[in-house]
Image (cartoon, rainbow, N blue to C red; front, side, top):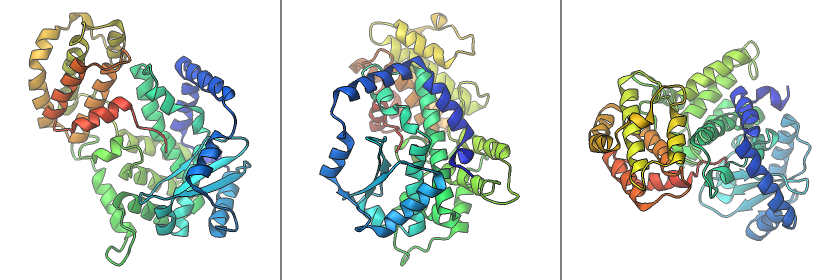
Amino acid sequence: MKADDIRSSSDLKLFESLLQNSDVKRVKAHIERQEEKRAGGQTRRHLLATSVRLSRNMAPALHDMADHCVDRLGIETPLELYAFSSPQFNAACFKPEDGRVFIMFSSSLLEAFSDKELLFVMGHELGHHVYQHHDIPIGYLLRGKQPPPAALALDLFAWSRYAEVSADRAGAYCAEDLHSVARALFRLASGVTSERVVQFDLDEFLLQVDDMVAVDAEPGQGAPMQDWFSTHPFSPLRVKALQEFYRSELMTAGGTNKRALEINVEDVMQLMEPDYIKGKTDSNKAMRRLFIAGAIAIAHVYNGISEQERATFKSFFKDDDLDIDKLDPDRLRDVLPKRVAATVALTSKSQRMQVLRDLCLIAQAEGKVVEPELSVLREIAEGLDVPFSFVLQSLELAELLD
């Protein structure tokens, strides 16, 4: 079996679509021109200056793990491994440079994780490489001087989640041990590494995962906020998706076929971001009404609603006949506090954060967020009991591939 066989179908579909997007093509061309002007080896020079290169003599066991992952994933590009000092568990794979791939590990991760857990982390990072995820410059697109259209930003968010699913599968395929994979994710989430106090139990952990994704009322209800928005999250939904992967024919003889696997994973991922714009539940309606009032208030507060703000707003309702010109900005501004209160009464904090993140896209429509717009966002955030720091994080659009 090849690495391509286990890649998430949704990742591949969104990846290929994004590569054809004119804004993505433009940014990619700009980056390539900038790279041509600079001397080669920038990434490697930075790594050599800020971390320690781990040769095969220095870290034979780690290189053996890398060899295993390279063989499993069919990678032909030479690797260089690096370690940097940090108390945080972290790892990263960089875009290939001068025919080499660089993987960096934090010192705490190397010291705390078992061999199988490191295989998962190594395979995950190499998954980003083998699936060419770095070909979509998501950081440049989201953090550039000119923010992307809302529709593109939402597509990038969705793709990045499925890219993580593919990378997780690559890591699990290398580790070949669900217990170790789940324990690695548990350690990333809890920070607990010693079994003197906490004994990891796979069945108990997976039971917790099942409880967290149970949908007694609404999709996404009760999901921890870090699952939605963190750059390097532990996600029970990712564990659930990996559980489906291990049960499939890709990992277990006679298991679920690939098509059924992808359907099951899409159902899991849908829990992460329900479509409140089209949803018919009371919580969906409250979120949608808040978004409309908040978006118009933000767009109108400074020099009226611009064409960019108008286009961004319409991108959320492209399949509906909502006419922005028939909306009354003054009335919507007056009812905004009531809609905030109604949303608080009917939704979880993570759902409120989703609306707030989408409102940040409206604020960014013209490229620069001004103080009056920030003031409205601050008011909404306070009413929703969401830290204003989340607004600032969203405006920087820090949700990137690890």
